[in-house]
Image (cartoon, rainbow over all chains, first blue to last red; front, side, top):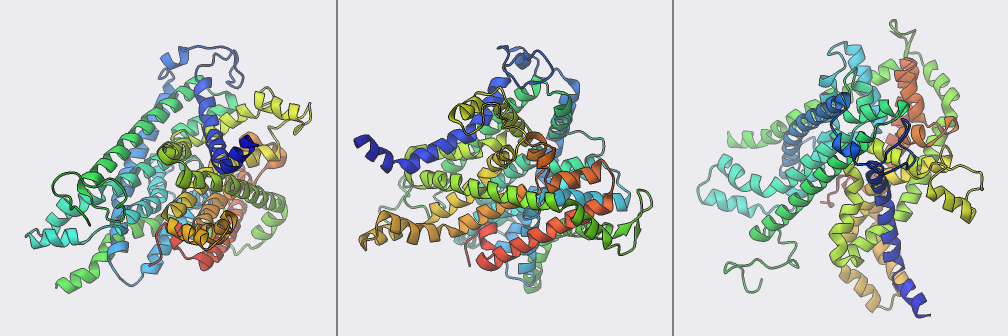
Length: 287
Length: 286
């Protein structure tokens, strides 16, 4: 009876916990099978434990090449889409102007379009245009295109909570508009920009559907996996997937920690008063 | 002078992005539409208002169209049923586990989409312990398979798009003013009533956004059907992909893409009319 009551009271939390497990199971499978020692070409059944493939992580030239292409593509796409997207977010949050609704619509619609439609539309476009031929350039164009909207959404959510009096204070203290932007605005919205950039990078490096339409003979990491899936995927793919997992997870953790520390130090988010008060003599005794 | 500069400033800021999106999203959609009305064979396509492409494509592939929406709909409902308790737990019950649980939700994004789907292929294969358990419990017949069936494809879709459902719902629950729930309880609402009449309506924007963000990519997906389904589980994405990249029947493929886009656009517009763009853009109404 007691156990039943306990179960009833915690039913939602238990269900939530089970869903978390469900989310993590495939990742665990990828991890365990990176230590598998398959006899044939297919890494589907557990055969035996070996660390051989971790030692040989970068031993497959085509895989390395695909990985380097993916990293280059993701870095460039992130850089371009973050700059463009941040400018758009600034315009949308800070200015009233004609065409605002249309701009919002133009930004939302790509996110609401299935990837296969974006991919096939771009392919039609590039085919009818004739040049540039499909390859790294067309991939870059496509990746920047689908990253922009996501960057705008992340950066603008950060800008909406922005206390503009901080900029006015800078102006009052004699800063010109460029100095104000560089020394006040930019550092304060940096976490948002960084978040947008992380999302763009993750979307780009993981993209398969749109890339599959516009890659020509260029091979990215996901495209390599897709090609290899027909003839058996080498265990090294699991190893590299796990390496990427650990690197991105660590970067994410550090970024979150940095952001929280910065926020604590600056105390710039008055909407979160319930978090720890700002330390030091500058903190008001009561707000 | 400064007034003019201020008036023009937003257009300069918007310029590069707008140009990029118009040139590489709107214009390609126009070309997609144009291509869908062309006739002829590869190398000699000609624009001829060939509406028959639409008629032929739709009558040939209506099964796959319907199947895509059924699978995507099922996956969306399942994702909602899984995501709501999780988002609720993270927002109200997790305490110091909150960040760890949030991390678990986005962790799949750190591994490649294709590899995650292939991991499901391993999990659902005939030799896997999961399938043995399902057979033992009697959900699956003793000699039955899970892989290469419709439930496998739906399970894959549900898994792959679940984070897109969890995050918006979590965001709307986290913003929710807990005092409103307390007020309901003070006014003698049972916890069930408080949930149905306060919490649930206030988290509606998150549910709307999550539903769209799950349904749209799921209906156009072909990776799950390719790896977890059989020839009998092909979705419209598989057809478009194969017509484009294998059979080079561009006009038919373009027609199918265009119909998919149009159907989704209708769904989105209905949703936006009903809830505003704010939900999708993650911003509060202003």
